[in-house]
Image 1 (cartoon, one colour):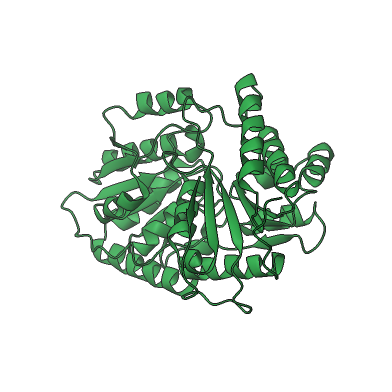
Image 2 (cartoon, rainbow, N blue to C red):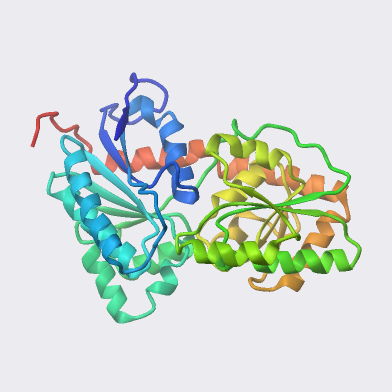
Length: 382
């Protein structure tokens, strides 16, 4: 665990009281939305007005996300003990989780309970786009109510998640805070390439629509639409078998880039011409926002809050999920008209500047902290 402390300047709060906040979640070397979001908070001016500590729960080893295994149960207990130790003398514990399926809900619940034993206000920040479908029966809704009992606020990053959790939890406990990206990081201009490059960023698994994208790419090549397909990503939560399936299917049909550290992602976007995210489900994907901030036209599936980010026909195109033909048609429009693609990308950059900057996200998080801990706690040991 490590801390960030800074002087009382930058981000303003009504009472200017410094709060001790413990951020909990999986950071580097993990990749994905949660590590990227945590990196955004830690690198923001939130660290200038709050005493931030970060408990990194990245474990390494073979991913077993969402599975009820002995290993996962052991890690669940270890993580809860780590949270309890790290929560000493903290005002707020801010836990980041996909919040589905059942094992993930239980893990968040146990960590929240551990933080409450230290007297902290607890926030659970839900990043997973499958929460609303998981809450499809009465038993699971009851489990969610019990699991979130120690939690003061549940933050969600997409509108459907807000509606689903508001229907389960007491009114006023659920807060929608949009994801945002650093505009300063994504300022590198990208030249058009003779053979345009279509970039995918995400975990290498079928649920991210990678195989749909590969099929769409083959359809385009059959139509004579030249392009290169670049896939940036690594092992998904469900384990290496899903990644091996994708790698076997894309061999010779796409360029596999591996994984990049957060600070290297702007360069990856700068080398592309088009961004595509063909997922089967999402919440509010940071990769789409990063691509838009990099002035790339976006083709993405209509899942989660994608249609709230991408204005169809103005900043890119939104298509149905699991439809390679629709993906191919939308990509064809962008790849066949570089001038129109440039206009779409510029409009996307403007949209992020106006509505989805990391500065706006950080302001909302700071406002939430002020509500939860209006008076700073004494730094004595509990």
